[in-house]
Length: 409
Ligand SMILES: *[C@@H]1O[C@H](CO)[C@@H](O)[C@H](O)[C@H]1NC(C)=O
Ligand SMILES: *[C@@H]1O[C@H](CO)[C@@H](O)[C@H](O)[C@H]1NC(C)=O
Ligand SMILES: *[C@@H]1O[C@H](CO)[C@@H](O)[C@H](O)[C@H]1NC(C)=O
Ligand SMILES: *[C@@H]1O[C@H](CO)[C@@H](O)[C@H](O)[C@H]1NC(C)=O
Image 1 (cartoon, protein in one colour):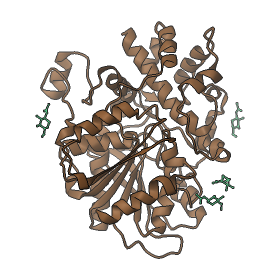
Image 2 (cartoon, protein in one colour; image 1 turned 180 degrees about the vertical axis):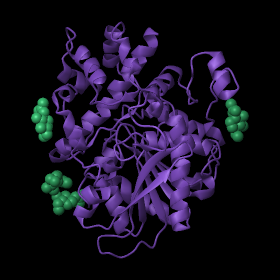
Image 3 (cartoon, protein in one colour; image 1 turned 90 degrees about the vertical axis):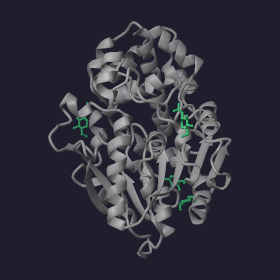
């Protein structure tokens, strides 16, 4: 149990570090923030009205309901700033953990992947995972029900992605290019490994690919975790995982008041040093993000850190696993069964603590039989987790090569 809790806290810290690094702020400042600021984007307005249209782009709001009842919002930017309608295939942008589709739209239009690609003639679709601010609807459940939060990234791969793919495919009559960041890569890899979605897919771009997580370590954070082991088990009863939630804040508070732990130093120690963020946009980022996920999802990620496998959620005992999976251990997602001829573009950064270089190498090893001309691997010396989405130079370093990749495939 202690180990479980320890790894869970480690995950929280790393998730935080990605968010906080992007925000250029101190972890501890989450505690003092006014929690109403998270809703500064008006949920009634939606992403089109509040983020896309003010930049002069056309935008459509769509919703899709998953087989398990979650009502997800999708935004479509069907034309560039010039108003010229897209003449290239649909591209679906899937965000990572603890953020939502707004991440793709937060930088200046000349630096944001979504706007740049709309200007390049792509039909841009932006998805928002269940539980994030614009995807909190459900056919029968309410986010205040614990049952609403009974999911992990398994369900994002099994329900959210297929519903979204099918919807975009039906609306456009075309197969799509996919771009995932972080958890958005994990769920795609999981689905592809099961042969899902491939019939609607042209190519996939994986920014900060996540499949294996066991190298995600920092001695400092481990030490911190060890200090914290006996604390606050009760937070596990909280099914919605929100950095603005009282339980998580309490957890952070408890870490930060430990003797010998200085939270500003702590952050420096555990944060991936994003090289290229525009500091003037960092407060805005904190106001818009972070978003909720399921606590169960965080626990699932913790299992991955502990075991080094990419498998379905482990219910912790053979009987429960039998009930869910018909086998005593959770089924593994077999990365080597991703078809060798699927066009894949993987981009990862030297300084990314979440998508660790060693873990990416394990994934690449799984893909070693991939057709040489169908796999592009980009390694960026300076980049860390948030640079791929928010970096001021990501358009030249990452997005231009991506557009070249799309054109060939
Ligand atoms: C939080 O913000 C709201 C709206 O801006 C304001 O009414 C409220 O007084 C603030 N609360 C605190 C504790 O600062
Ligand atoms: C984007 O535009 C802004 C303001 O016009 C400029 O300062 C910035 O350098 C541009 N970024 C890139 C990557 O061209
Ligand atoms: C940074 O953001 C500010 C405020 O939006 C903007 O004026 C400036 O051009 C940006 N700089 C770069 C390099 O993008
Ligand atoms: C994974 O898939 C590959 C290719 O389909 C297969 O050869 C291998 O046996 C599978 N591994 C496991 C553990 O199922």
